[in-house]
Length: 313
Image (cartoon, rainbow, N blue to C red):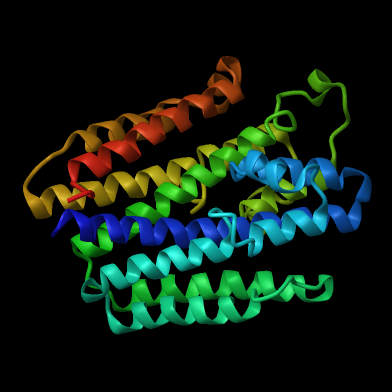
């Protein structure tokens, strides 16, 4: 496969996952603003920071305000990190790799773009926002469904899945890092009581509310939530699960191409951390420090994947 095609698949699915993740964080922020208006500004600030868009927003709009943040994250043409920009970038990459995709996958991506371009053509009214966010999530799911249902499990599929799980792990890690002060072993360390709304925000932003309640009987505990999002191999959005899949897909590429690359050793090293650590060790080391190390190592892996598979060629 040409490196340009591999890169197009990797980034196509990164952009799709990023757009969906942003929509889920907006949904979490909206819930905070509706249930606890006094905490709304700090929550929008946290969401902007999680998406890496704080500076861009501040330069354009100043202090975070709910309606402005929502519009900025959803559809601002000057924001390359908006949902609409992500969907458009995914479609551009899909066109580049069109011959590598089934008709169903291409149509799902194209329809996602056309539907959202129409929905996001103008600012979203408050009453319409939940429905629009739901459509974003659904359209992203349609693309994944088409991928799972129609694509041969070969190198094309593997690059698509690596892009998905790489972006998903990055999103989960950034949310944990933004909320680590809630996930400390004892909330007394930050001088504030446990906040059920904030717990709900963490789980909603990572799409894990129902899964957590099912597996843990609704017991809200900092250490348990942190372990769930970092180490639980059953959870499709945990760091351990995502990097297990990245390792698997890189392994399939090794078998298909007959070559082992440096990126596989980097991925194996990250996977081994999740197998060898428990939450006691992570909290002893420092949750923030652990996530910072992970994000650094993950960024190194992403660059190495691009080098090893020659995305620029």
